[in-house]
Amino acid sequence: MSNVLIVGELKNGELKKISKEITSAGRKIADALGGKVTALLIGSGVEKFAGDLGAVGADSVVTVNAGDFNAETWANLVAGVIKDKNPSVVLLPHTSQGKDYSPRVAVKAGAGIVADVVGLSVDGGKVVAKKPIYSGKAYGNFKVTSPVAIFTVRPNSQEVVQKAGGGAVEAASPAAGDAKVKIVSSDLSGGNKVQLAEASIIVSGGRGIKGPENWPVLQGLADVLGAALGASRAAVDAGWIPHSHQVGQTGKTVSPNCYIACGISGAIQHLAGMGSSKYIVAINKDGDAPIFKVATYGVVGDLFEVVPALTDEFKKVLG
Amino acid sequence: MKIIVLVKQVPDTETNIKVGDKSINETGIKWIISPYDEFAIEEGLRLREKNGGEVIAVSLGPDRVQESLRQAYAMGADRAVQIKVDNYVPFDTTLTSELIANFAKSENADVIIGGRQSIDSDSSQVVVQVAEALGIAHIAFAVSLEISGTAVKSTKEVEGGTQVVETSLPVAITAQKGLNEPRYPNLKGLMAAKKKPIETKTPADLGNPTSKIEVVGLEPPPPRIPGRKLEAADAKGFAEQLVKALREEAKVI
Image 1: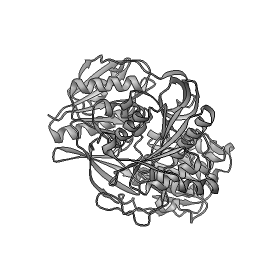
Image 2: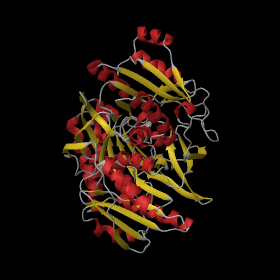
Image 3: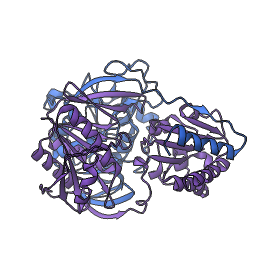
Image 4: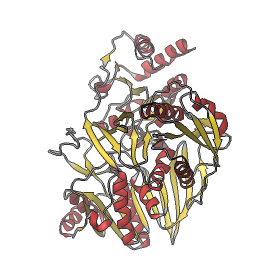
């Protein structure tokens, strides 16, 4: 049997889209391998999401009651469920949390791991994982040779497919153990905004926005679209916006469905972070800017005229 | 305080990558230290300057990685160790972590610090795997770090903000941008670094771990959806066309 375990993720008590994405991806793998999909949800009151995951392909859902996220205890809980359920494939989110605990899970399970995967297929009874390498300038295909294979999956890379599973819910209580790292305080003031790394639409600004006072121009468009606000290194280094908004090599890697680059020239380090976006819109006064080489739709024009017009137009059609 | 800094050698960002069957064609590639590892080296040096001890720079790979180790020497590292793996696969994180963990154990290191990810594989795995293999604490995405005695206090980036966390030595840290500004090696340092010894270890010295990854093959990136520049008389015209294109053609909004 080649069963698949996926580990969902929540934010502010809500199920994240990545949880459904990897459940659907897990379903596809399990169908090809002739196995079952178990979804694991950790948190309090997580039982209520079992139906959501059942609707996208989970045969059963295991719930573990736990408090706030801590990488060490989470790794213990996930490894405990792996030991109990003995899956041959485990899919985890390649999110901020995923990057924090997945390495510990791999070591605990004695498993090979391929991280930041964007494609999953099955060949000869084994999963082949595809991931961008060398800043997206190449793609690699990898198999894991250990009995348990772990993959962390990039948000927005997998389609959510409605496919009913079984829906049985089982509570488990693996040992959480003690954490050596104690969380003293959290500042999550940016927490209610749309998260950059997982956003399906990003409105991003660069040197062309001219100063920090002009972010509202882009934020207006982002609000209408339910998009996250990104920035180029130039805008971050100028002190116009915190580093947490930076997209690119020394910022976040993003793969949204739509990336709207406003006043961004498109340095190679920026392209490294957003080059895998599905559709790219570039709005820039300089028609020779390198961003136009990757843009699906290019607008050579002044962002201070085009972006507000675009915001108005979207307001009209999106109501 | 014994500090191990992890130095991964990667192709320069601007380098044109030519894909071979199972690895890239290395001809003409300019190699650099992965940018996040520069933050790690800098932080290691600062910890030593404050707490005393030594900074050991470690790099895995064939002999070309000695160049990166010499740069770490030039920045101020006290020792440099090459874990000599001739056919090093930069994506094999569990093998890499086991080798590093076994080395760190033999050195009885207090602090292990590396970049939050390398820019060739973007896996964000090795440092935390090393922590797990050694049974020690880790702090991922550190943007500040204070160590006094055995007490460790750090601010780390988390989704939507930051957290202040505390632990005690030994600890493994992944360096996020913002932790520091890496120093440049000066000419004198670069000259001196040329003469310094580089210790080598082989996988056989470090428990001979086995790989758990098979490289099926590399390929060029998928072709992009062909792009076009829109033509319009004014901003409103552009906006109308863009909305139409994104909703009816791309169907993403």
